[in-house]
Image (cartoon, rainbow, N blue to C red):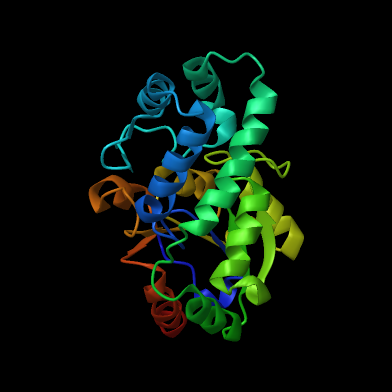
Length: 243
């Protein structure tokens, strides 16, 4: 697909986990703590939750098949509830989201220097947003902790009302917020969910290799592939020059 000139771009919509923050270093300890809290000290319940989430208690890392890697509580909440033997799904999802927001903030591990990248892109005239399958509350707290809040105009979580990725709702909402055509939006993410959301909305898809997915899996669905968000100012400069 032909690259869009950067001069035509209105905004950049970032995924969060695996894109702005290290997925395993942040969510491994966080989910372990959530599992521990929900099990209330019962080893069998800890093991049942870990198996349902495809999570290793020993290494505190996710298997590639884990629904947590790209999904939201809305996606894997039912299997988590089944593992705990609980029928109050909505209550449990609220508990999981609240615990996750607290524990992920404690373990928050940025990829590179997000504030520097956001500052540079902002100076290039780009409006910036974050769209994640995490909850909006958790996303906003992490955005503050990363020091990028002054540059972020738009935040969407799975519970904001635009749906979750891979559906295009978050991307379309960002475009509407900016009063720009979706074709003027760039979506940056580390998963197929991110790239699919971009494609479905008619936006440009940029894959970063800082998450669990390999280049071979992402490249066929991306307009551009970079190692990490640190490469984005250079990419936009190149596109502008080429344009």
